[in-house]
Image (cartoon, rainbow, N blue to C red; front, side, top):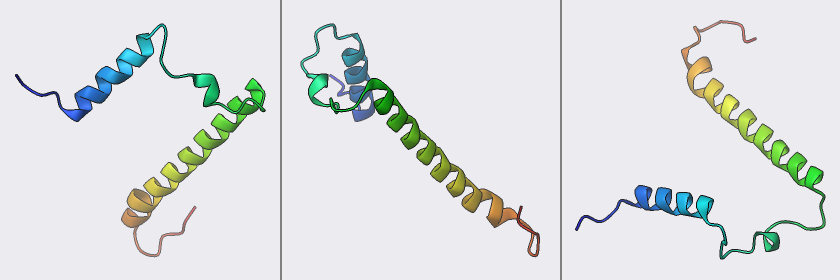
Length: 75
């Protein structure tokens, strides 16, 4: 019997949790109940924006600035 790779195990676990009608985890215990839905969504988008900003900076540093000709003005 072939053992599943850890990547496939994670995928199967994820799919299982998505289709689980009665999950064993109480997700209400995980979220901050002192915030409104709007505040939690706003916080999520703030984090997504910061992640995107870091990714763009890393891309720029890795690919754009390292390939720019010497003496070229930065935009």
